[in-house]
Length: 66
Image 1 (cartoon, helix red, strand yellow):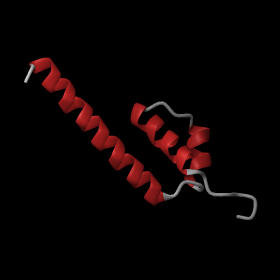
Image 2 (spheres, helix red, strand yellow):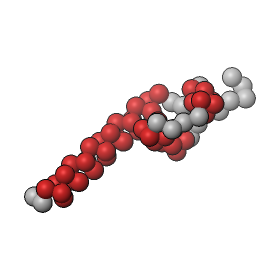
Image 3 (cartoon, helix red, strand yellow):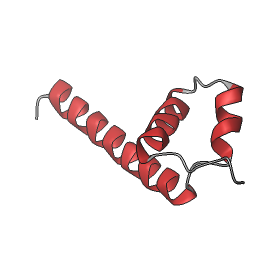
């Protein structure tokens, strides 16, 4: 559409981060549907999952004391 522009990569990171937490307004979700690049969403989500798993592994190693 002529008046719309693509969202920035930072907006994609913010949208994925809020989705991980599970707190997001429906109006923001609807506004982002047409703007966010699906490839950016997948890339940010994969990096987020890897960071989360890495943080969990580090936490478990710290608690266990290995």
